[in-house]
Length: 254
Image 1 (tube, rainbow, N blue to C red):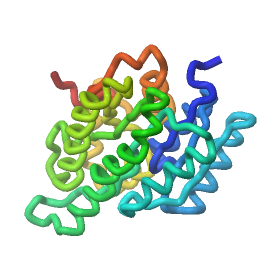
Image 2 (tube, rainbow, N blue to C red):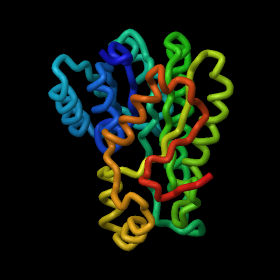
Image 3 (tube, rainbow, N blue to C red):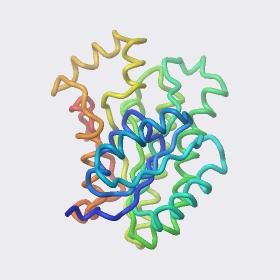
Image 4 (cartoon, rainbow, N blue to C red):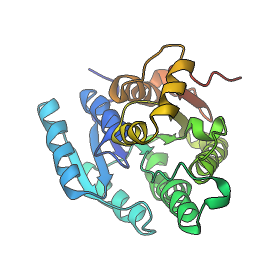
């Protein structure tokens, strides 16, 4: 039996892509999973898929928009009411405003990136904190190589992702005394958003694949979900304040 069996996780943006891959990995470990998203039908589909994946899987689907300042409190309340606890928080949901030169970034591009990203991450962390203290929980926030590698035309998105990394490192120091771990994953795995970007910018993807030592795009469940499982298990609970690049070696860095 998995060490995570009986625990509860919340994954924002869990109805598709990376978030759904993480949800699949946790459900296989016996974790009760709550997923959020803005699309009711996508959430219902993801919930049905997860429940079919493992007999008796406990899956809660909640419609929520990360830019709604009240969403985090409402979502956390529902999760704890349904599962009686919260052990794992995955901040994954994020609007994707890219392909824009800095001088052309609008206020809407910038505020949408930050409201759906670092501001929402902070709101969910604060709302979850009292419950994570009780469970000595795990926080995993999604960063991006767009930030760590300063990729052009990602001014709003990439700078926001770096703000998430900064917030995570500070939280790791502040919350360590409660045995709450806070880490960041920079993923590059197949998702609806990545596939859309590939269609719109095939030349960028072609160049990126040339620089990938492993020569392939990763799998959300196996690669990102597998790491999320490890970081929440006792074996991974001595790591905090770190950033893990899950991108096939495309951005090898110190």
